[in-house]
Amino acid sequence: MVPRLVAALRGYGAPVSSPSDRDRADSSAAPPVTHATARRVVLDAGGRAPLLPEARTAFLEALDQGWADPRRLHAEGRRARMLLDGAREAIAASVGARTPEVDLAPSHTAALHGAVRSVARGRRRVGPQVVVGAVERAAVLNAADFAGDRATVPVDRYGRVDPEEFAAALARPGVALAALQHANGEVGTLQPVGAVHPAARAAGVPLLVDAGASLGHVDVGDDWDLLAADAGDWGGPGGLGVLVSRSGVRRSPDWPEDEDRWFPGGVGVPAALAAAVALQVAVSTRSADDASRRRLVDTVRTRVVADVPDVDVVGHPVERLPHVLTFSCLYVEGEALLAALDARGFAVGSGSACTSSALEPSHVLAAMGALTHGNVRLALPRGTTAQDVDRFLAELPGIVAGVRQAWGVGGL
Amino acid sequence: MTTVDARGLRCPAPVIRLARAAADAPPGTELTVLATDPAAVHDVPAWARMRGHEMVGATEQDGVHSLTVRTHP
Image 1 (tube, rainbow over the protein chains, first blue to last red):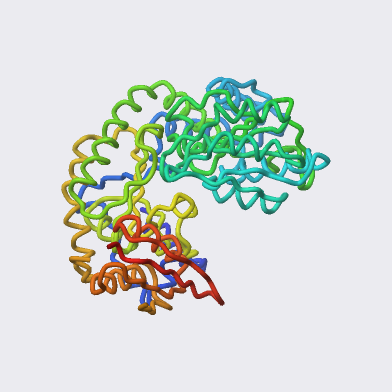
Image 2: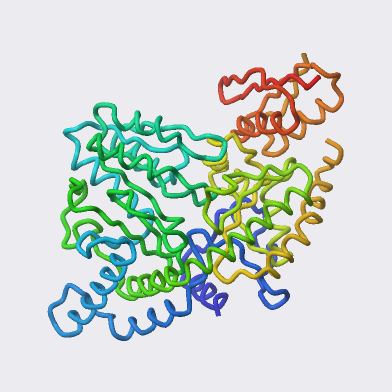
């Protein structure tokens, strides 16, 4: 089905290529993707998790019921508006906010850009500075550079900022906004937002908390003035972000006026409804999912160190998300390792330079002083079984050894 | 002092070249690796930490990173 769609696109002359295609001398020689040969074990759900079945049902239903433009005044438009407002209301209830405080964005990146830009603009009389942690998402760092003067607070080897250092940085004169993520999506480490938020409040500086990797997986609490999140990460459809802004936060768009003031053009009603349903499901099963995934990640953490020589396990062992684990294998090329794992049926992520189109290593691993090559990033989707993880752990040592052997690095 | 030229090589090649030189060197030797790969700036100190070597210095000129370690005694 998918290859047929891609072939149809090619037939219309649309260029269909991926960054990796550019590097291959002959992209037609790439192995075909097949899912029939071995059962796939997907351990890469960060930012794009498999769609929850309830979300899929809601999405299809909303395609029929909510296809109209919610800005229209006729019955069909009003029905779409009702579904959209219902989605916002449900999301608001899930994060402990009022419905008018919730804005839906066309992506998590857009939510973060909008938050940084609108607060930097709204508080420009205070000053141009945006204080951020060193391991914030690229969208936050880039928006801070774009909209103001970025002041970056370093992290320790676990990827955490020191709350006192962060508090001191945001209390300096001229700070429009501070941004500290709830937890890091690459390494899983939780940030001390509970210690930082009172300091931000005392300084009168709004705190943006990026919960893109946390919401739906752990309780994100209420230590924030703006909260951003990602529906694709919690099991909703990709391409829908959330920004919740407490009513006292001074914001002003630095983009053209639109009826949808904070995210011009609005979002698709089916995606919004499916995202809200997915969040309700994720929150209702959160504690059971937390317990099982936390146990599996602990197993991986222990066994990877025991079974694979020269591995650097990254991130905090306890103060972390339940489902995320990252480790780096010395002398191993990340791209080769990912390809070898993929060929054996495992989908994992990586922060190694050779796996990114920019050929720069993950700024998160770099800021933590962690090894950046040979990096494997796991984010376990809900429903990951002990059998999935056991199969991964059984095959990983041999796969790593195979890649090392190809490079002739035995005994180094 | 020994210099390892890993300019133009991508990760993990600069670290592997440096590790080969370290394996042949007597303890306490200062080794400098030259690399253009931006990942080497992070990976050489991480490798030194994992192997118990000491990071002595890191400089950059015209896109070439010069990273020096002292092998552990």
